[in-house]
Amino acid sequence: MLKQALDQWPEEIDVSVLIYTQKERNLYSVVGLHELQEAITSDYKHSAHDFLMVNLHWSILRVVHKAAQYMDKVNIRNVRREAIKEQLDSLLDKVRAGTPDEFGDDAIALAKNYFLEN
Image (cartoon, rainbow, N blue to C red; front, side, top):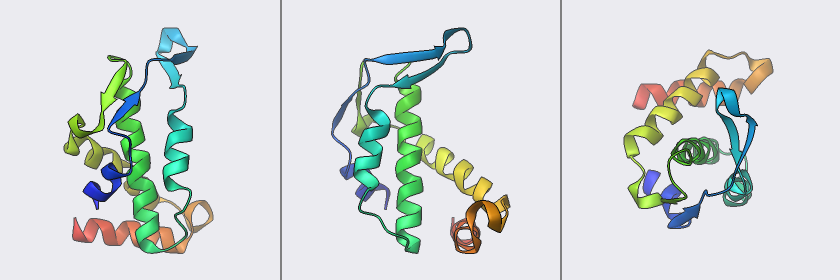
């Protein structure tokens, strides 16, 4: 699943333009990064596989976003798989611990199943 997700990203991502919202707290956005992630995930619907893939892509975005602090371009093949998994685990743990009003019963069940299998 991770290989499939990484294959959907460009090999090299330009992260050279940062917009600081609070520079003293190091809060910034990377111009074009969210739009790229949204374009990649736009065809996913609401199946269990799609739920995991959207969260996996969001995890990739978060790792690339962090890397943007230190470089102008990120080669997706050099992103540590462990870092992506840490982000995915963090996201799904929040869903697993959430309420149906926040995430829905299906998402919570999928997150719980993810941790049973991983």
